[in-house]
Length: 351
Image (cartoon, rainbow, N blue to C red; front, side, top):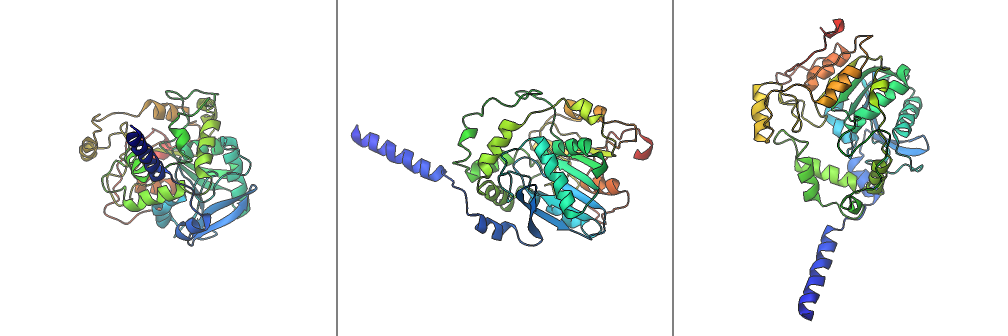
């Protein structure tokens, strides 16, 4: 009995040591993941990790990543845009190499204030703003709060509507017990399995991508900051806010991490919009057997809430088409960058 108990304790200790993932030294991570053109700037009382590339006098584009991500997710976008546009990407407070916000405030209002301070710090009066997932919610909150600072708005699978377990006007009362273990453990195999739900196209989730996400999770203080952000997230009724947005808007289901050289870019998750028979075949391989369908209820409400008074352009676009229509003059000279458009809003400037 004593031997069995001792073996059990040894096994538990071994499992604990295997699953324990402490934070990595900041210097080590910065040397690996913040080479040029990365830089660190003091903004709103914090050290912000950003990349600011392209001509200084070019039209500015601000890229806002999603939950648990970092500015690295926009690298393919930056390479397409930086020859003609000034491209600014950042690690939001609490993520990546920016790390925890010293104020401990991870509300959307604080994120908007940080974006305003960043544009002021860089001397940018107005920018086209692109946001993915959680970054999409922050982007439309920013466009509503600071209309003079946003020339165009791109929302990629944006967050912000209530869903099961998420109510308007309330923050979560507590975290699931498994999530509370995040500051102590972040097994890479579990992370990879979770990420596969978002990477529908085979081959796009590479070992290098998983390694980068894992490394960003292990940046000092990031995992605790992520939990703080979850606990502080309070969704507001979006329709009244969205109705105030006057900037032209692109509503897309294309995630920023999909490669721009594939014609199957707009695949995403089980509820993804069907963009053609070839897409459907790929979706079936991923067990996304929903056939050709319309927009999800969240996207429909989002599109209906955006004010059409100035001809907001609400499309579902392949990345190349999204970029070209966003700026009305950018073209990607690649035979693979085929634009599959669907449900174009019937506004005069949508043609």
